[in-house]
Image 1 (cartoon, rainbow over the protein chains, first blue to last red):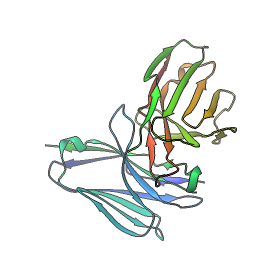
Image 2: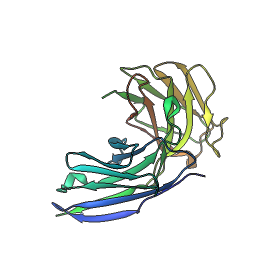
Image 3: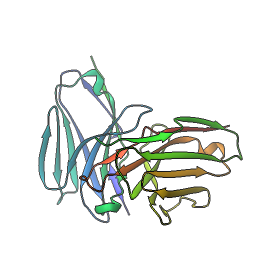
Length: 112
Length: 116
């Protein structure tokens, strides 16, 4: 089966750093994605990891360890607008049929 | 980035009726599109993979006769919820990948379905 786990909720302070973890067990692996979703809106792409290591993009970084089935999303210099759900998703097969299996999502609340 | 649209954005229908939701890739051709459903405060659940010119592939537990998917062209996939019931009320989101691009999937803005 497919299993992707994330913490349900997190709270952090404006200006701080927060790390959102994701562990996965899937039938195959062809990449891990992080998406941000504000309430009532579609997810927006944040990052993609297919090889082990850290990918940095501005205030957001994402790390992957394939041997551990583990990823995290790191958000720096938190802003109030970062309050949203963060979704971890795995592509088990890749290619043209690269369907995504989503984790449970982490609702992040940024407080002043 | 690429743009995917959905129509309608919101729809309210009566129990027992059918509702059609359209998903369009506006600036690229998508041989494959995906349909997801999201209940309040939950994550996205993949319902089916829509394949242009062939039958959709449904995930386990999704009734193919209730959720009809048609992918008649490279830019349009439709999801029809037949004989809708209140428990079908949900946020339906489609996505598509640009086969000439990289790995990223582009999501439509979603359709909020309320069945009364």
